[in-house]
Structure formats: C-alpha cells, structure tokens
Image 1 (cartoon, rainbow, N blue to C red):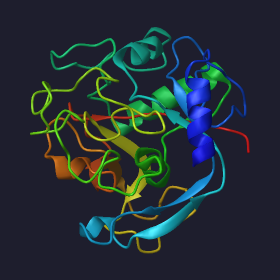
Image 2: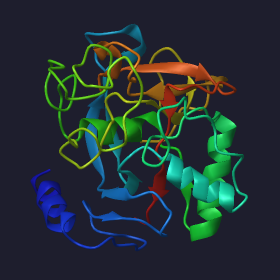
Image 3: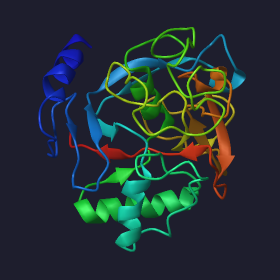
Length: 264
C-alpha cells in the first residue's frame, strides 16, 4: 500500500488523465461532464466484521485481482443533468430544497441509475457500472481496518451523519467533498448519502463471492446499500455496515457512485 500512497500523492497534482489503464492513484474522467474517478490497484482485505451485526458476518478475506476506477464523489446533480439534457435520463429529480449543482443526486431508483450508467457507457465508449459491495468496501476502507477510515470513534465533523457534529448532520445532504477524503482520495464513503451497489440482498456473507464480483443469488428486488447517510446514526456509517432497499424506492437518503472498468 506504500506504493499506492506514493502514486496517489504523485498524481494528485497532475491534470485529469483518461486511459484504458491509468496508473493506480490517478484521478481522471472520460468527458467534461463525466464523474471524476480514482484508479485502484488489485488488492486484498477482510470484508465485514466478525464482532458486529449479523449482516456483516462472517468476516472473510476477499481478493480483487484486477484494477478498476471508482467515483471520487457520489454522482452530483450537475452530472445527472448532463444526462437529462442528452435525453439519456429522466427529468432531474427533487432536490428536497437543499440545492443541486455539487450536491449528491437523490430520489433516483435503481433503474434510473442503470439508465445513467448506460448513457455514460455509450457516451464514452467505456464500461460504467455500479460497484459490487466488495469493491465499494475496498475503496471505503482504503487500507484501514477500523470502523471508519479515520478510526473507531466517529469523532466530530468527520462525516455527515446524525449526531456527527457537522452543520448538515440530521438535516440534509452536504455538497460532495465537504469532508476530508480517505487515504485513497474518496469522499463521503462514510455518511452523507447511502450508495447503491450491485449486489442482491442476502443477510450474511456465507457463500458470497470472494473475488470482487457482486452477489446475484439473493433477493434481487432488494439491492444492497452502503455507507449510511445524514439521517442515520453513526454506527450505520461504519465501513462494514450493509443494508438493503427495494429497487423501486427513491429517497432523499440514497445516491450512488460509478465504477469505471479498467483493462488489466
């Protein structure tokens, strides 16, 4: 991971870079209105938490043997509106009076998100999709093993969740990037808005894939959400926490971030 940290620092000051196999740690986007993504190297970590909620058990080592790039932020209203203008997405959803622009997109269903990802893939000629929860947690942990990337104590003003000490906590979502990034450069993996991921819901990790692929043998009318939100208490924003929502749900609590596939 020392190499990754070095590369992250090296590329942080460089212009956005787009290629089939950008170096690990580089930040790039494929078009002016596309989300920024961060390239990640292959790696292993322990998914879940053996000492916590039953939904997070059993804790197990997982190995992702391919590179990929994940959204630096949750997809924003301004990025969604580019899809709407290009007639790839439905009309811009309600922002609940909090603001659009750099606020995370909310009030979109799982199918609405697929429409956006299809549009982005067609526009760029690259493959965009939702991450699996294994890929999501890999990026959220960023090499850490604590409850949150910054430690086991939620602290004050580290994230946007209820009773977390920010000016948005328990009130509404914050503009993306309002809090410090984790060691790999990702913002708001803990708190702000739940992130949809690709996996069908199963209330445990028994027999789940350990290679980074999504679990698709569960209840696919309910998909997994990760990361917690401004509305929920800190324990739901832990890196290991997982829950579900029905695919037809749209909520002011739920957003998403994109995964852009890379060539090995």
